Image 1 (cartoon, rainbow, N blue to C red):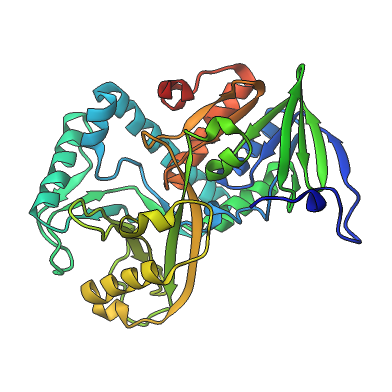
Image 2: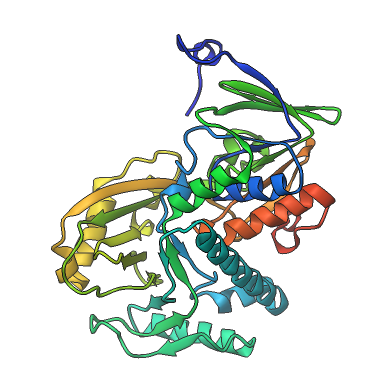
Length: 391
């Protein structure tokens, strides 16, 4: 969203006077990455201010499916091809570490969750063969807990299934808001950042209701990063993710675990599950409408929502009968190689970033936040996620 001169230079009557704040570190963005950064940086003894354009967890962190998976899902064999075996193995270990971080956090903050594992389903023999290739690659690298089956668990025409134990779902909004509230950082909501500048070793972050001068700043802005600096123009692309949820159901749950389908031969690619009260939750299906889904418009669309509902009614008619009660969307940030990026702005070396989660913020975010905090505090290289890999 653009900002006019008049909006930027005048306050609504009765609004608090524009503040001038001095801090050690400013975090721009109040999602799961911002909340985790705040937790680590305050624990390290830093005076931290968080500047959030809306409310905490009002973006994708509070709008996602709440699936926390150990990453790479059905694509480990492709990660080996793209990054090489050693890097793929290292990435897998880091994603397992992230999953354990999230599990500890949801226990600490008493966040509703379940840990039934996750599954991916194929639509035909070609996709079943891809799932099998993925599992074989996992097993070749010592990840023997991943299971493959040719049996369709629902008798609905699926071909091939991967099961990954240890994966979970959680209430993401509660995790982020409770973690941020406990972090000890000062939080400025409804304070979109207008500009970031560095002179000498001092960074100035200018927001709608406050200007903060600090020693370091860090962008936890994911898809919105390019709205703050041109550096991200060719590195993080915004794309809308749409979801819907139904009314509760008195029938036994059919799909208890996070479930994904990635139809390489068609457009019905989604992720779904049922909550303990029987509500059905589904998202995805972007491929058929990708031109419409690019950009920052976070409104839902009739065509994509109808496509999801039609697919559910066809595959799971007993679920398709449930009334839809909520429809929503969030803006996701995608990178060229499907991995997050961590680094510093080339023209402002005291401004760091950890962004680009490719629709997997819960699977990557807390770990990337910790690596970014370590990079800021003591210069520890963030490894696989460093932006230098993109050239």
